[in-house]
Image (tube, rainbow, N blue to C red):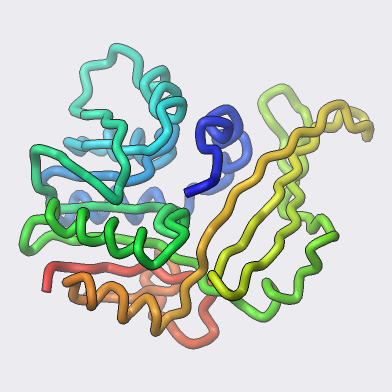
Length: 251
């Protein structure tokens, strides 16, 4: 995993503050299953904190110490049921097993080789209760994605922060088709009165999977596919979908 997630700890909340369409899905899934929850790639707590507020007994795992420090600072000294753990998902060693394990918002795709993915899934399988669920979110590559030029910054989103500063996100990507990797260079600009006052950059790499590849991978690692949805509202997957939410159980 070659993304510098310690660097991302300072940027994540402002860059992904608009991502909240999965929160109700995860809190409802916890209420449905009950028991302990394990979140892999918890980051600064985008999903963790709503789960805590919903009453979850949660273990939050991340590969980045600085991400976890951000999470700890948000939680403070509040008496909540959470265990925060610095571990690599490819080599998990936790005391408990869990009714619900989640790997939100493309976190699984930060595993950049099939070997890493197999190691992670094998490690996760050892921590899932029989009858529990593993939820993994994957985006699927599309023709529009591959049509992007590597020397062009494409506009992602504009939003206004609490200080009334306008922030703009742009990205450009290079593709390693042999290894199915997307190397993305993200630009974060701040503007005031139409003038750019600050610009920052961050890089990340993700590995894309095709639907039949993912299906085989999960089955190979000992999971049964309970459901593949195209969104967090439960829309069934079809061949035009560019997002998939996988609900997996032990085989």
